[in-house]
Image (tube, rainbow, N blue to C red):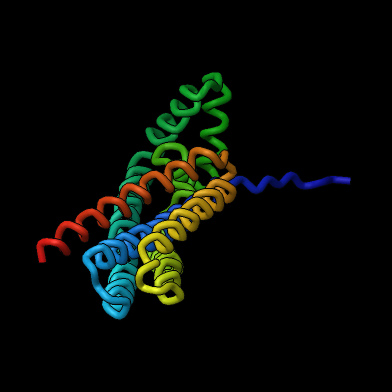
Length: 231
């Protein structure tokens, strides 16, 4: 009985996972930091909530726009390279086949075997072969601007909502310790989830996101305290 061999590698998640982790992390850190700065300046709870909500909306839109623009630039570059490669294949297919064969030789195949592989691939989808092996463009790495934009905006909103909820449920004199503690816990959970989704170890990702989050919270709280006293 013939059985198909299928492996689900985590590299297939790299596109949306990068945008998701970046969005959620930025949502937690930027919104919590904004809340800490405003609270440290001595503002009341309504002002803190308004500042946090404004940060959530502005941040989500900024993340969506930034991801769309940056990933669209990558997509434009990929399309330009593919168009150039297609033209080269039409103009000089023999030279392109030799180039493909040389790539396989440099990867460890004998010349005869590399020639055979290149010949077979050129008889099939030559552009796909060159895109994958010469340009490094594959289904896993292809730029998807809309997916990246929506993922970043959605995860930023979820991340930013967490410290905002902590503010809403906390008396004003407890806002700073509760938001800082809750945000660091959220960041630790996010680091663990990102590591688990990517198949990596837990310790380094968790320590990394918690450290930078704590630093951001401390700096903005200090700035709020200084300017609050000056005001």
